[in-house]
Amino acid sequence: MTTVTEHATKLKNTYDSEMFIGRLGWYTITEEVTKDHTEFCQSLVDAFKGVTPSPELPPAPRATDIFKRACTNSERNKVPTEDSAVRSNYNVRPAGHDADHVWRVIVKEDIDSEGHRLSYTELVQVSFDRKNESIHFDDLEGVVDLDDASIQVVNEIKWFIKDYFKTEAGQLTAYAIRELVRKFLEKQIHAVKVRPSGGVYFIQEKFVDAVEAITTVVNDLDPTNAVFHTLPLLDDSKQREMLRVAFEGESVGAVEQLIGEMSEIIKSGKKISADRYAQFKESYDYLLTQTSDYSDLLDDAMAATHIRLEAMQSMIFDLMNNVKLKESEKQMIEVDF
Image (cartoon, rainbow, N blue to C red; front, top):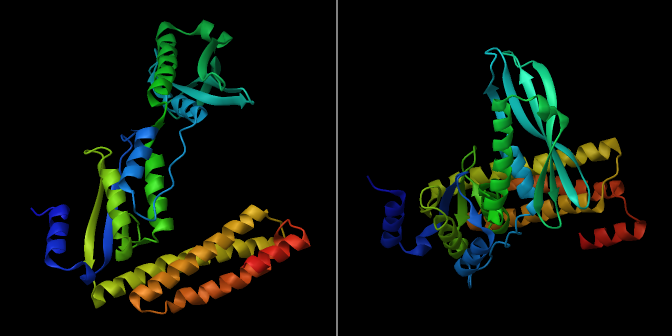
């Protein structure tokens, strides 16, 4: 059976690059994937050396976020009890925070076969010290009445939180890596989803070096759980029509959603922050640039998108009246437009 990689190589060896209108690309990064932050950043720097655009380096994972994930992932549900009609959920609930600490509390909730709560007991206060990044456990009164099996579960949860925090410190999650790849494709190289359910992108041929760089980064993460595939797309009328339909379907939907959000704000008369207004303006600028790019690529006016972008531009002007700004600042925004 011919693999995607073999088929892609055959196309590249058979046709000159000028025959390609772009690439199809799709990737998978499963939840099993984690990567040391420093190593991942270095892999980006190495792969994108001399290549533009390049992704922004991701921020280092925050210790407080790792602690919170540890607490969430430690939870145990529907644990059997001595009473066959009763199950116990051991959850770790938020219990406040300040500049120095984050608190959680381990609770035991007994439920019947229908999921109805029979009892609720707070067992252990868990505190995270932001300054020295340490975790402390303080047993509450509820622990006194626990049987040996329940005490074992609580001890396992304590151990899990400590171990998870130690193991995952400095590690980027699969979600963080997926988001970096997604934003790079959609925001920086203007990739377009060619499948309604998403997951398969078209990338213009002028970004081929960037695509190959991000492919290298993803494929070096984990040979089993992370893969990025690309496939050259020949420039013919059938492919152009497919791309035109995909682009206008995606861009028209995005513009209409933004118009709907702005319309609701204007109708309600509520005020929005300058940052929120800037987000609408940035979205408009991005969609305008992307539409111009694909109009040139496909030799098509993209009329449906342009009509809606004109309506969006008008609405952005109207939205200025809902921004919490001084008049002089509004004029500066208008000039910048």
